[in-house]
Image 1 (cartoon, rainbow, N blue to C red):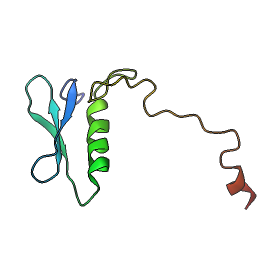
Image 2 (image 1 turned 180 degrees about the horizontal axis):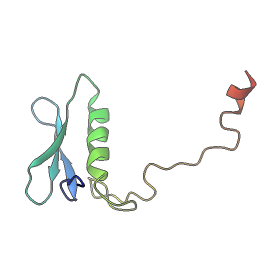
Image 3 (image 1 turned 135 degrees about the horizontal axis):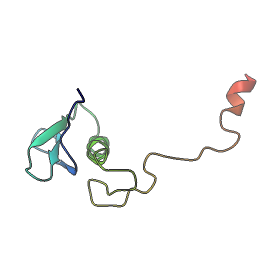
Image 4 (image 1 turned 180 degrees about the vertical axis):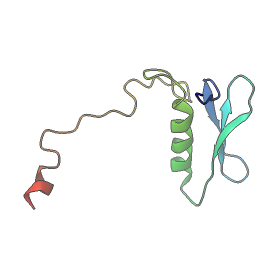
Amino acid sequence: MPKKHMPSPWRADGPDGLQDFNILHSGDSLAVAAVISNMREPPEIEANASLIAASSQPAGGVSARGEPMGSFGRRTLPRNHGSSARKR
């Protein structure tokens, strides 16, 4: 039986009093997940929360902050990427 998940859209909300971010379902504001600070820097915590929230959107959708994602998570590596490691 396929497992069900909370449908999109999700959004990142925070930081709360502990500097954590909650991932909320936009329709009812109930938490789907949480990104705890765990002694990480605030920009990293927020970025991780936004990435998790954006994962509920199809590619090319909209990020948790309402920004277009484009080819989210994809990048082009230079042709010589890794060539120096092979020569060692």
